[in-house]
Each structure stands twice: as C-alpha cells, then as structure tokens.
Image (cartoon, rainbow, N blue to C red; front, side, top):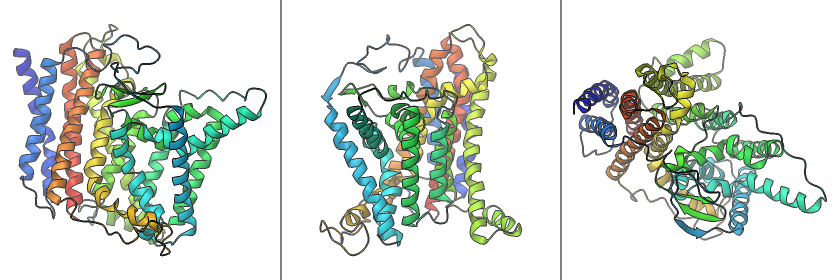
Length: 496
C-alpha cells in the first residue's frame, strides 16, 4: 500500500506538470467552430487523470510481462505472441490478385497525373495519393493488417520479374547483397520525411504531373534497391511506405503466415518489432510531421514572430517569396520532428536516471540511452496511429468521398465511366460533435496503449516489478506530453 501511495504521488506530480501544455492549447481555441459538448479544461484534466490511473493500475496489477516474453519460442508456423487461432486460408492467388490491383491503381494514378487536367481537385491522382493512399492506408492497416505488403506495386512487380527470370534462366539468379544492419530503417525514415515535406511544404504539391513523376521515380528506386538487397529485406527496412504502413499493421489483431490468416492478441504484434537503427527517427518523423500539419493551421505558427518572421528573414537573405516560404515551412517541419524526438528522449533519460537492476544484472543507468530508446520505441506506434486518426479522421470521411466521382472521371475531362461523376460530397455524413468524440476517444486509447506497451517492456527488462514501475514514471510524463501535443493539434485544426 505504501508503494502504491508513492507511485500515485509521483504520477499525479507528472500529470500536473504535463497539464501546462493543454492549458496552452486551450488558449489557442481548442473548441474552434465546433460545438464541443465538454469544456476543454475538463477534458484536459480528465485525459491526464486517465493516464495517471492507468499508470497506477499497471504498476499494481501488471507485475509480469503479458504481451512479450511469456510464451515459448513459437513454431515455424506461428507468429510470436499469437494464440493458435487460425481463421481462414490465404492461398498464393491472393498475392497475385492484390498485387495486380496495386499495379493497376499505380498505373491509373500515374496516367491521370500525366495525361489528365492539372486542376488538382479534378484529377484522380491528388485525391488518391493524399487522401485514399496516405491517410486511408493507415486506417486500412489498423483494420486489416499489412495490406500494403500485398498491394505494393513495386513489390508485386519485382516478385513477378523474379518469378519470370527464374523460369527463363537455367541456373540460379545471383544472390542479393546482404542488407547492412547499420542502415536499418534510415531509408524508410528519409522517404517518409521527404513525402511529408512534399505534402506540407513543397509549392508544387498540388500539380498532378509533378506527383506522377515523383511516383515513377520512387517506384524505379524501389525496384533498383530490391534487385540489390532482395525484395523482402528492402521491403522490411527501406521502402518508406511499406515500413510506414507495416508499423500500423502490427497493431491489427490479425496477421498472415504461411498462407493462413491468424488472430493474435491485441498489441502483441508491435512488441515483436525489430529494434534496428533508424526506427526512433522514423517514429519521430511520423509524429513530428503530423504535429506540424496541425500546428501550421493554428495562430501560433502563423503569428508575426514565427512563420512571418522566418519568411521575412529568408526574403532578406535574397530568396524569392515562394522559396522563402518553403524554407520557413521546412524549418517548422524539422522543428516539430526534433521536438517529438526530444520529448521522447526526455522520458528515456528519466528512465536511465531512475535506475534499477535489469535481468542481466546491470544497472539501468549504465545502459546507453540509444539502446533504451530502441527498447521502448514500439510504444510510440499507437501514439502515431492516434495522431493520424485524430488529425485526419474528418479529412478522410469528407474528402475521401470525392474518389467516387473521380473514379468515373479520373482525368477530369468530363467522362462518366461508371455513372458516378456527379456524385457530390455529403458533408452531413457525420457532425462536428461526433468527430470530436471520435478524436477524444482515439486520443485517450492511443496513449493508454502506449503506456501499456512501455510498462510491459519494462517488466521484461527489469528483475523486480518495483523497479519496472518506478522507471515508468518518466514514460508517463512522455505520454502526458504527447497527449498535450495532440490537444494542440485539435486546437489548431478547429481554429481555422
């Protein structure tokens, strides 16, 4: 009981400190134009209390690992952490059909970008890339698992070429180069960062031809990399979109192995994430880019002292207004990515400072911070998912409807292939209050899941449950901090 009181006191102190950021978010107009049914200050405190209570409950009721490290080494046909619950068979023809569908959609997107109208909203490519693919792909990954691995056009094309080459040649094809472990997921982190820059910063981001050329260049690069390092090795580490959607797919309750669809315990899939270099950077890019997308719509970024000040500084250096605007937004994007990285590193530094004896007998304070950062990085995945849903839910619901009319007129030339070109967007499909409830529920669930994953990992690393619980006080600070940041995103979006 005394230990529980100490934990509660520490948790409340951390939660109270983290509430400073929600107060700032309120000052930026959290309610905005929506009719929010609950006062913002009440929700801010309620969210922090939920996290604090979750922290205390985990410390008292979760002394042993439940998501990882409990089960014996799985057999060849079982996924780690998965109970023996085989659902349905997924024969190889599924790969062929979905791969062909991915190649077809890629072809339509590129062709519409090159041959269609250059008025962005009237062209299939923009809505498909920014709404259906980039945002809808996250929702599909969370619901259905790693769908993109099966539909990836460059992976499907590379596998098709490899199969054909094996049939036509008498000898074996040259073995690929071993993928360097030091390279890790850095190529994926760079790819996702570049796409985020194109989406949020680049002046020509709404030009269909530009997007089509970029898509062709990216696909060509993927094919070359797969030929060098192997299709699966590169897909697991270097393909930015494949790794991005694959991370979210680990949160899904199903996965495929050896031609079967299996059920697995919720959150168990993400605990098996391989901890290689570049993983922390990738998660920080994912969190930071969404943060900047929300912040750039709010008054804080658009104030005279930040974006306007940066813009004027770059203009004074001799850059044109358009280039200066890109440079100013680039600085903002990088700043948000660095901020998310620093917030996470703060929690990791706190974990090391608290100390405690690990299972291998070493003191936690003697472990390098980089190793601890990798050890807990999977706890950021549900937070990144929550950020995407909170920020883009209404965007997908409303803007995604445009794909129905664009399917009949992908080039924007007046065609009506399927008879749906005149279907209008239904802005009454869901109200602002319902959107707000979805955002809040997802925000709380995502951060609680992150806290659960971090605590479960701590019980794997530490010898004593008390040390594991003490170490997570700082991770609670991180979760409250990211919750506060998410409040700021909603605030900025609603203040437009």
